[in-house]
Length: 81
Image 1: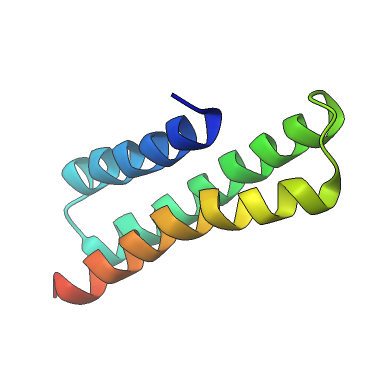
Image 2 (image 1 turned 180 degrees about the vertical axis):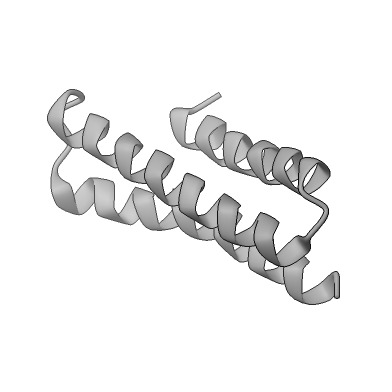
């Protein structure tokens, strides 16, 4: 399994865990977005500083790694009202 796929899975699992623990959907979504933004930026920095990828390469992957779980969180919040 690729690192990107593992990060996407980790994001979705984090979202599920937070939604199970925090019953207030709006608060859970905000908490998830803050935590996932921090984790995904950390992943981006590891890719650039230690794995040798360029900023441009990592930025595209970061958009996917952060954006897909964030979009799922926002959609779940909107549909779960």
